[in-house]
Length: 84
Image 1 (spheres, rainbow, N blue to C red):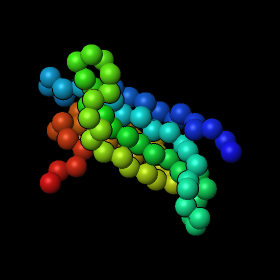
Image 2 (cartoon, one colour):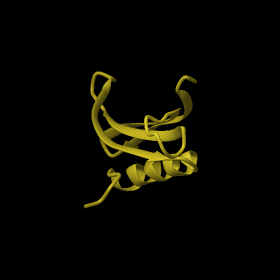
Image 3 (cartoon, rainbow, N blue to C red):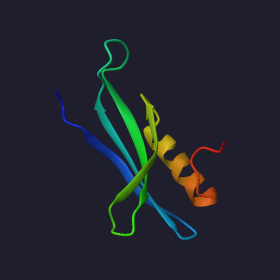
Image 4 (tube, helix red, strand yellow):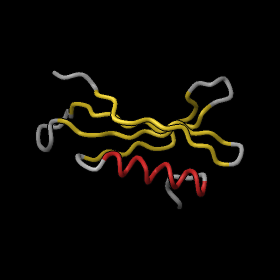
């Protein structure tokens, strides 16, 4: 099995909050569908420079850099990934 492959990672600031956005390519555990997929995870960045609370986890078989950048832009503009 191939190892996880780093695609892109970003640090985003919104007002006094910081976020860590990471996209990797990894193996799928599903029997059907793509065997490899891209996963983007967003964490709040804690005061001690460690990952804080995980805010969202998104996956996509294609377009991972586009999805990653869209998430970063939402965080930069609004400080949220998904508006409720």
